[in-house]
Length: 225
Image (cartoon, rainbow, N blue to C red; front, side, top):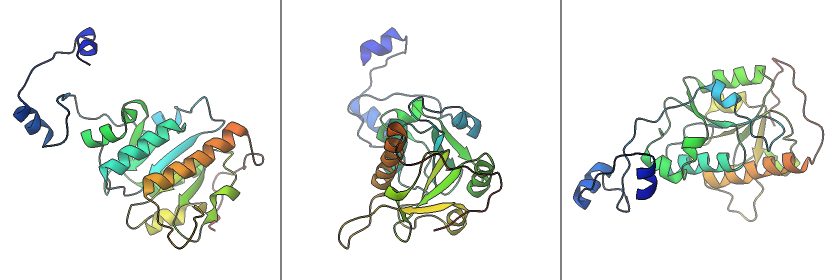
């Protein structure tokens, strides 16, 4: 790490462990701390331009009220790994991209566009008008993810750890989807649920399974199931 910093002409300064603890607020720093400018968020256009060459259609992950930094970092990491264009979060009622999020994302937050928007539901309307289908993940009463056709421009919306999707955001979704589980315990961590759903989307597109892409007309009414 030190050699890499020197090669890139990044100044290296030696400090006491106490000073490192102060800089990190007591977080586990493993003896090394990097100082950088504030995180630079992308905008929606950056996300739209960043389609993965491994997927046949645009795929955006939208997060509604994710408060836990570890979950946010994990969600960004999974989205990056499975070919999403980027991640969209609201400007309020959500965790920001902090050093803890950066660490949990394993650097993915530096490589995948993370956009902040002032109004999530309005952004959903904009994406619908561009031809995107919007799938909202819910714990109950949604359609089985294995029975969906994700072969088209898709937005996957995931809600907060405790309350799920907010009512207006849920209403804006074209489809509600659920992960089938065994037994009576059906509560998955949001980051785990996101990984399962995104892998299904990834497999469908890589294997070209299911049927032809869904066609959507601008302004088409949502179909909530």
